[in-house]
Amino acid sequence: MTEQLLSPTPLPEAAGERVETFLRWFTDVLSPVLTAEWGRNDRVLCEHWWEHPEAVARLLALHDAWTVMVEGDEDSEPSADGPSRWWIEHFDPHLDALLHPGKGPFRFCRNGHAPEKFTGWPAPDAGQLHLPAIDGPADAGEAAAALDLTD
Figure 1 (cartoon, rainbow, N blue to C red):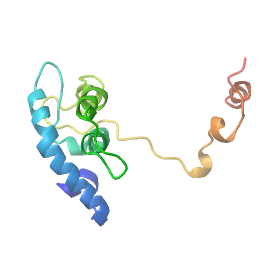
Figure 2 (cartoon, rainbow, N blue to C red):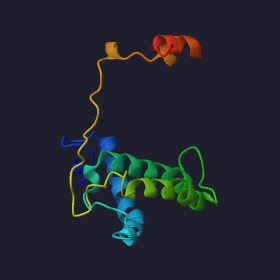
Figure 3 (cartoon, helix red, strand yellow):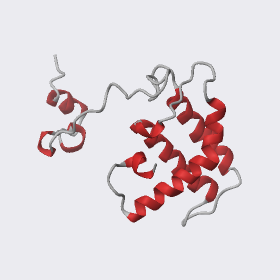
Figure 4 (cartoon, rainbow, N blue to C red):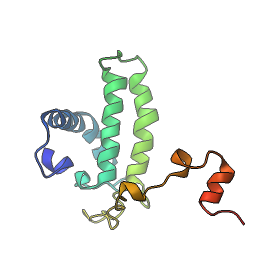
């Protein structure tokens, strides 16, 4: 399952450890909660969640926040309100986004796993990318002119 989660190629050792830690957390902490949400109302949860890039990104973000807020990390101890804040500030908004019936990554999986129809934007070559706010005009008028938004 580790290779299915992120990549079909072998993972570097550090990434492999992170994935294993994540999968243990997913199984022990998150899976029981998600199982309770399964099939509730119009929310959609896919049993092949690891094949949905948005879901993987959100779940990894949830794990990272859990690690800092609930378990603590090398820079900080967990706080007494860490678990409560994690549920309210991180879990609830991510769960709503993940299980949203019209916009969530599992929206096409109502009757079993279905790959997302949109597979992502192609990345431009570095020379093709021009970001006016970063490397171009310094004010809004110059940005509008650069984007040809003037009348």
